[in-house]
Length: 233
Image: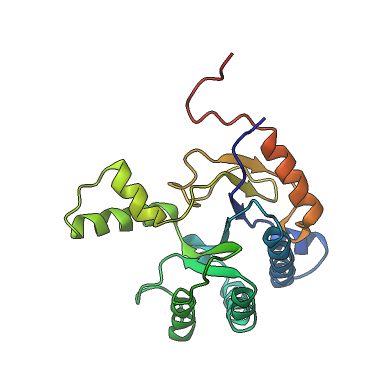
């Protein structure tokens, strides 16, 4: 049984489109339901007194290759989330951060890019929960970017310096959960996941709820985390 507390969990929100298709709906409706599931699970996570941080894979660098109508629907939902929910979350003690490429040459519209940058300017003193939304994010790109940052600062690139540059005060991941049955990380927080437990579940993201989260925690605490060491007799 794991003696390491679950302080940082990562979710790869997969299966919105498949959930909708199975019900004869458009894929965009699946993303709407997935957004509602996210709002509900954030409330559950905030109530967890041990959990400190959650990282959520919302939109990868590869997701721009999806149909234009689907991408637009996701970006519109992201705008609504920033306008209607981020400030409320922060007032409730939840800090929200955006992880990903927000550079001028990113595919975001100027309006949305500025909204995302503004989110990262806001801080919460002693937050009850910190949420990292991974948007236009790629794990390999993050490692390359961090490496170039160290080189530009004339800092030797070592495992220790790269860890500090990437994590920047964040916690390493304890557990990564991917919904919808796929069993891969898909370029999600690769450095942070080095010693994370991995859990792949068959249900789709819109079905995520408090009962499923409790089951996830139970499964985590049954794992034997050794971090390369051997189990003592």
